[in-house]
Image 1 (cartoon, helix red, strand yellow):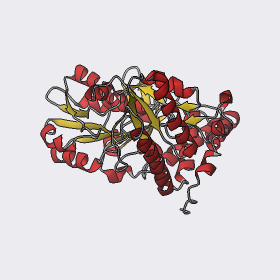
Image 2 (cartoon, one colour; image 1 turned 30 degrees about the vertical axis):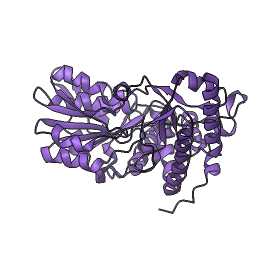
Image 3 (cartoon, helix red, strand yellow; image 1 turned 180 degrees about the vertical axis):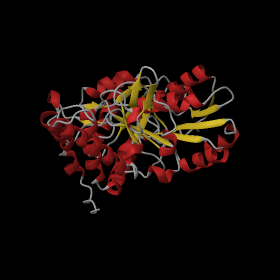
Image 4 (cartoon, helix red, strand yellow; image 1 turned 45 degrees about the horizontal axis):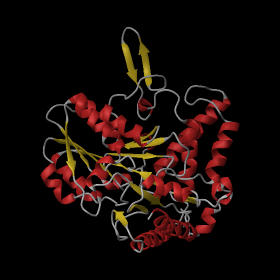
Length: 412
């Protein structure tokens, strides 16, 4: 593969139409990338081309549009596999998003669990990696164990040995927190799981947008991610699972496309993976967009991007440190974190702060970020969150910090 060109933030930014021609007459300082990233022109073009030139259903027709749609859909699967370091593209299941991917595992793999079994989650998780396991506990009698977080907003991995036992069947943990930005060290988790024969599911929604991965090398069993955070359209996600596990799991949903044979007398047999888990008409155009997104992303200089985002993150952290009444929830240094920075400002509700900043063209997210147990852990109702993507620049950080200083004076 050809070496990527050295990263140029402004060249990257120029590939995003919404940033070069922002709506509303205000500059757009978009710092809500942990919620949803913007779309590069390459993705918009790919989706439009598909919808205008090959719009049809997949794996069902023999006319040329259907065959073109099927080829594009499967090409997208192969592209995603390449981005994730997966050699067997059939291990890539297209879903509706991270939430759907985790629910698939909870309802399918979860059918093998019952009373006496345990699933380990943590205080750091997004609700999408908590609620499915709570539902599983209610449905199947499984016990939930909770790994606490440190004062720095990281998983307290020192507590793993006391929480993992022969009863543990699955560890379901985040790769990177959508609140604190802390990156999880996967190695100790996999080691703990292997010591008792448990499986590992990783919520990769926040990590996947920050560069290609080698999932098999991590030693995990399942990985979930969303397209809309990975510079792709809404409505598509990915579940990667090891073939030997997926092949033994029962279907999550029934319908067209996931069957081998349906007979009213002898019953129904199911397709092989990945089709077994893709009942009905899948998100075809969205998957095509995701394929274009990962091809676009794979060509980037991620080492250069990491340096760029770390510098901007450092500016945010330093700026918050200089603002009276500001408190960072999460690591205050750059080691072992991504550019997701959550904070509170004394006397200012996060929603009020985010609305104030929006008037100045700065887009943040305010609230508990679908992580209420973590907010409870830190004794807060919510935070304001700035989150970075490769296209962010110094002007975005300047606008954020100036807006925060204005807000402090306005709401004091």
